[in-house]
Image (cartoon, rainbow, N blue to C red; front, top):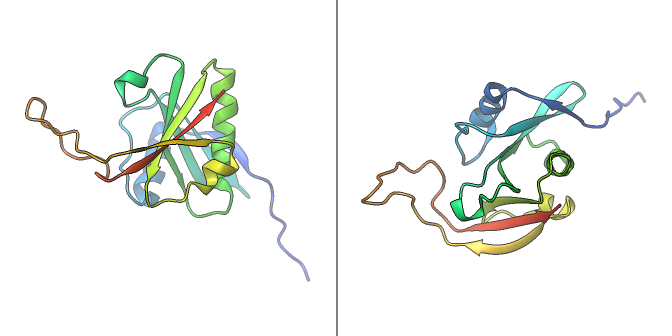
Length: 153
């Protein structure tokens, strides 16, 4: 029998527009981002199967100049693509001089890709709206409990 051989994943730079279109089509619960610091794509056999985007931390008290937040990690379901992207972004962030990576996932998600990539769950975050009387905002993300994952570089 002639089996189609799986080539290893390949990390490639992608434009913000390409990453956002991928997220728009495939992400289960988030919209595309307005801006980010950088992003990567994951190719499998020459086909884009995932993207990851890093930005300044959303929470102001975590935005210290040496912390980077993974704001989107989206795949088409290809096995191990998310873990590959989390590992690759770690190496790039470290090479750029960052000291810590953070990311948030829904409380209902397992975090198995984060565990496999060496990240550690550091806490639970109570879901709340960013809408306040002093600064009205429309919800752009699920308002539910989340898990915070971190990685010291």
